[in-house]
Length: 544
Image: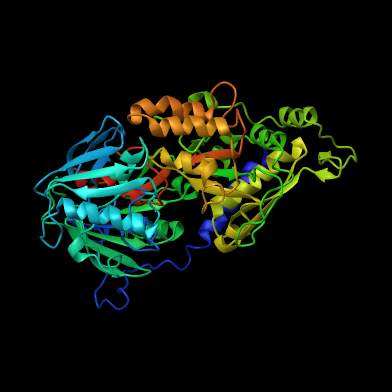
């Protein structure tokens, strides 16, 4: 496996190239007139402040209605419900909820002591406003099934659905509540919420400074001030190495390097990477004129052969330096994952045999399988500048060669990927604590919708299993249906079934942490580029 060392070197060199310009001394925040605070390592004191280089800057700001907090804690806002360390659903702003016998009405009771960071009480009317605003805005929150939402007094909200939906509970978990009285066009830049912290300064492109919310109803956080540095992963490592950060989110290539005074925290995640295949043959373009379908990847034998030829364990070892796990779905390890969908892989000979049984052959002896004039070749797009995805794409292309398949990796901008993602394979990343994401990725009703079912996958049986999951009385009852949608013994969305994806790896989230800092128990994290680590921020403290 000579490719492993070569790819590992290329990842490291790509990442290290970004370190040269990292600052070695604290810099003044542009336009703020303030000097960036010192880390505990720099000051030599264990104060009630922390500096974190764990997150990318949110493009749309800190508004839950625009998607802020969807992958991890919204930090500045509270949610009605949340998940505990075992991913069980528990109360947050809510004191409980009831579902009607027809499963169309959800009645949520609210605690009476919650206040926004401006001192105003949080009431049922704020919850109603939040969900109505999100539904009307057509934002990242899919509330198309919400018929109406109304307040009953100050402490009760009634949601009425168009049809039963067990996953509606996920919206109660992930949607931060915003104040009706303080919501305006610039809310994303000046958020007011009832979460454990409040934003006091945002220097775009550089940092955000937050302070503990004195009116927070939950456990009071130990750290009164947090400074988030918006740094790329390589620059975050450089900041940690220079003593400029107490916590830093780092890529796998740097996980093997020791940093004096800091330890490496490895957190399991469902932050996955996988290859989406165009599922149908070429057909009518989208309304925007973008091409749809692919003659090669629409053949199930090609998709199954790629799945069989790729050695996922080797990808983890060679590209992620062991910091990850093989991926077989968008939800490995979560309660709704079907463990039976794990397939044998790393076998290009078996993959080639699959192609031969489906009528493919190397009739002209050039090493590439063909079916008549059709060659087993296709493009694989990945976002340019993402070193990990680039290396995964290159490694996958190398692995399938022996099976007679040619993959052509191409680094492109997201704008170019959007234009081509219905007709070319794409190396995407997903991973959520919400089974509804599975529905979005595989439901026929989401074909060609945003980035979701970009390959136009469709299977009536899979749709039926997922509809039963949505129609279930609760999340627990829905689990078996979600699992059968992946594989029911005859068909499914997994590699055992239609193989519309070749899932590759789940990343471990890696954090360099000050040796004296306790960041509590970290649960399995979703896709989120560092922000999910703050989900238990109230538990953080200096070690005694």
